[in-house]
Length: 506
Length: 103
Image 1 (cartoon, rainbow over the protein chains, first blue to last red):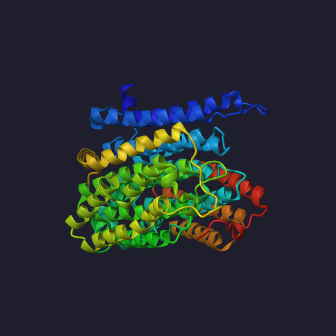
Image 2: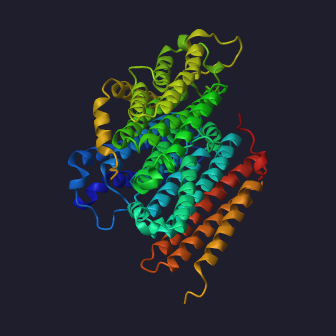
Image 3: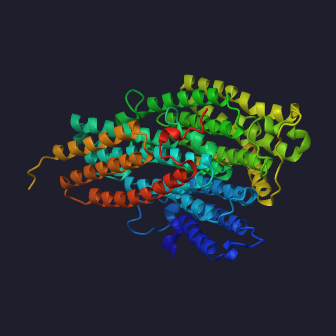
């Protein structure tokens, strides 16, 4: 039993997923003609949230015991690396997934989408995401990526009868699979060049003198380029972001929130594992000829491009989609800094993702709470005058938008500040300046929501959004809101933990 | 035994991959796009197995290829289900007609 301790967070979530699936299959409320038909959602949502929170708590427990002290199963590494990096990301992913499940508990019954398969899909997607953060071998990395992605494709198309939802699923599926194949082909070439599929072996082989042969070097470079393209697709960096706004807009809002937080966090974990664990030293990690300048360029293009387009959106959901692309750009700045300031930069990535998770899921949750069946909150106009009609909802939305903007004392402010500080400390002044300018640019479209909520009155006769009532959504918003403030006011402890979790770059 | 050099296998695989990629980028039929992705996955499998043949010290490449086949099957199932759902709502399988969501 003790050997299973190290992977207990994953086991808890996987077992919970199986139980949820059974509970869904044996719940008798699916029978046709049931007048009191309320659907299985409520209990399953709670079950999913409890399962995922249990996963997060197990991760914290294993952290306190110390994963390096635990005996693990033979042959587990490198397929599942049970280290503090994995635990930190497991915690973030499970937290985001649990909050998304609570949002779904309110959203799905309200919008008559009450089918129980949402929750097992979400749970198994989270299993894939945890595996992805833990994968130290290209084989388990690919399987984890597909486990997560297939579940999320299905969640995107969950509203089967809606043209927009199915279209979003088609686009997401096609581009997502294409990206996965690029990544896979890159991995196959890397195996050919180095003879290894585990990232540590690849790293050692690249540094080995035999790898300096021109043919091998060219192969490694082509493989690295293909893998970088695949990674950029998955974290939705401009110019590989075309699927993101469409998929985010078409998916049911809780699924959008899940994609924006858990899936993106897992994709960044994969990126760190590959770049630091596989391509961590030698010429590949140098500023002259390696991945850092490519990532810096991606970061600049992503931040600027996403912010410029986000300001022109008329749909708040689509604006939040572009905002999540812009945030990926901020994280990419921190990733590009890693070769100069390894632990600190990695810690800033991890803290930023944690802060981004609670702020973004909160913002999507507030958007869910603003609308009800037939009166969904979609455009800015729908939110006009919300501050007067429903002050509590408006205040919640305000808090999360301020955190996304980066206003103190929220988590978003400290995340951005820490990324900027690390970047300046590493001597990359231009990147830091672009980051700060972009934060100012982003304030425009976040504050525009506040202007509509507090300073505009709805046009007479215009359809206005009516907030829904749901204890689950309110509960999720309270948890997210408390965390946004707590992470912003006491950032020292999470940052110290993140520094401990950083991958070692030898 | 190694009568056919490694490069021949790799060349065929790369050719298949490029055909798949070009098909994916140029064709407009969703089913053909799915087939293009399968073609690229198979090109990857060929690459893995070919490399493994010339690295007989372990079977990492072959094992990898088996997993890729399994994943490709799962991916095809989900992909076809999504395309089917799209077809039921829209009565078309042309990717050009997927134009409700845009800036």
